[in-house]
Image 1 (spheres, rainbow, N blue to C red):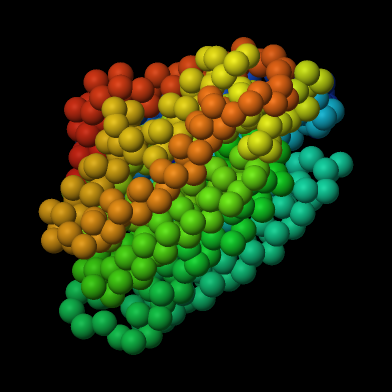
Image 2 (tube, rainbow, N blue to C red):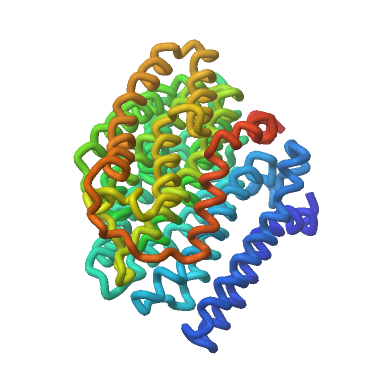
Length: 487
């Protein structure tokens, strides 16, 4: 493909890069007083990027016409599906941040710029078809994320979260890089297509180690067990809008990247990595469910919930089929709405002075004075638990269905049984809100942006969401088909 054609395929990244650089200059000249204006422009840039990637998803783009820069980048329907979720979650994280950060005097102009540059990195991650592109995109996202985690410089918890995320993130990046070097050494190429061709047959022991190290590095990014240890601390310590961002957009990018690496680069050697994914899925489901039971902080509970949900999504990857990939994407879209709604609800939990209310015990009797908010939280909790008729049930159903179709009945049965364990702590939250004596702590008023986003998320995960099953399933099938298409 000619250079001009390649530039057309990376138009979303070009738009966000130019927007980020321009906004960086504006931030330097205008200072923090322009932070809200910069946030609005950043949201507009993300919307423009989403508009550019939507046609590829709707048309089911795949094949040679989607490859740019001599096989370094692929703008197919799969990448477009992930990018739409990434840009939507990033835009929501920008919209909910100003009311929260301004209370701490920390609404700085750099916040939206960091989100935009992180979105550029995530876009490169999901479109990467070469180990070099993969690593560049991953590090571009990670460097912005390290700063965002420690964004509240006056808060010791935020500084601690940033330091932990940086140290463990650097370790994971090193593990991933070592796995990439082993893969390159034993296959002689960094291209996913070349790796796939080199592994079409027997597989060397060194390549197996490369696969293990690469999946270990990626497991950190998706917070899958046993590389989940950073998640509760970072989710609790980081500013809540940043936690909302971490739980949605980077999670989509990392999971989509893991799917592309496993199903594309190592697609011909599924038996070499299926056992790893099955272990990570089962361990994540169990640790996420059991770890959340004793939590007293709502953000830490949602962190373990995130680990638990990643385990369910990895069941779809373990199936190593197109149906499994499609089910993962459906679950991922629903998960983004549930996580976004959950953390926005946490942002709305404030006392009369505007201070955050994060202790679960302080939610007692919330339904007495915040009826709509309590209803939305209950819907989110039941949806995360996979209780019908809420839309979260559909995400689990399609993943289990894909596992059964792939003759992994035992894996699906274990996932169904573990769902019961996870339902305990979700229902416990609802019980505290509706049946305990009122604590009268979360009495503060909510901002309109938070109310609007929570309303949209609640409507999506409500039974009304089932009206979208055919449309969402069709888009996911199209994206999965492009992932499995071999050029």
